[in-house]
Length: 475
Image (cartoon, rainbow, N blue to C red; front, side, top):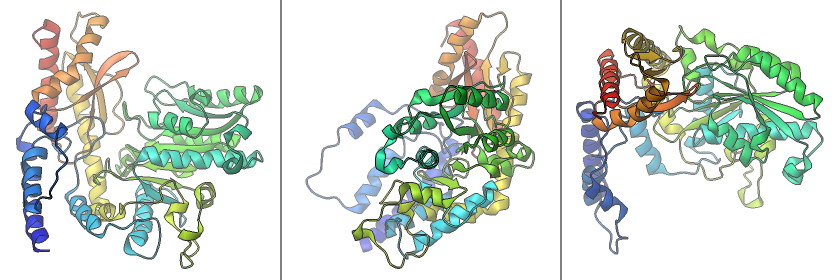
């Protein structure tokens, strides 16, 4: 173990230097072609190498080429900077390397605690067993929608686990155009079919219209279909818009629909006192998907699914062959009975460490800082004569575009489509693109608590400078 101890100390020093120097370097740069080729063509080694050599290679061949998400001026997608406490806990979890499917060992009990903590942070009811950690919100959504499908089948007198979806009449779910693509993927995988997901009308800001939802449910029932699910967003990925969850919950209660809330990115926004009112009704959902590896900064991968009724999860997924029986499992059984994964990594330690290092007040402070910075970015955009804010700032996403006066919409769309990559390649800041109401846009997602107003100023400056260069043909 001396080799491990020496190499481990070197690795921690290497990573501490890497994290400490991130703000001083470019946010992102394309890999050197030779370095890319080296990684792509690594031969399978015949003989093993020492741990110290491996650590050195990590320092020279991997760490110099990051995605950029650790930098305070990285505003792309929804990729968090890793919390240092979570980084250290990941090392310890790997050293233990259990399967967290079940049993009487620390990771299992710690997962029950951190799932409860996540529910408390989100203001969601949590009876014992009503949730588990997943690889991310995509898997959490599959688990949640699988439970919704099985409940609907049971109410129709069908054992879908035994008979399959072919025994079901068409089940119809309701989303909006802003609903995350993982919901459609889950519907396809679960045999529901993408065409049975109805895209309900939204308002101008991208919120699902509860009245339109109610009307569409009525029309589908009249057509002999079987509505079973509605999906609300607690912070859309495009603009951070939070649906009127309480009004959607009213429709679901009246119509007997399962209400799933996609809170993968935005649900923790309710910890900001200025944003909390937007989340009214979240506690009425049947299921909630969250991603601790987004706004909380838990190192990837770590999602979470919470449900109102743990029996729905267990009834949908429990399968205990003789070789996995555990007479000491207690009333809750194993985590593997509540989801798809049998072998499950020790995710809970990095969640525990990340939350415990900040506490609820620290997390709330960081969330409020990010939302305040997003609103400030919106103000800076509004103040710039050649930029245009494209959506209200509700959480910590600001969507805008370059919009010089006297330029046609067609040309503005071409400029803004090229703008994100052109900004990224310069290395000073990083934002990504999207399309809002047919208009190409920049979107900045602020979930790094290290972000400061100076970082926002760089983004605004780059958007204006690069936009003008693209317009004039100089870039």
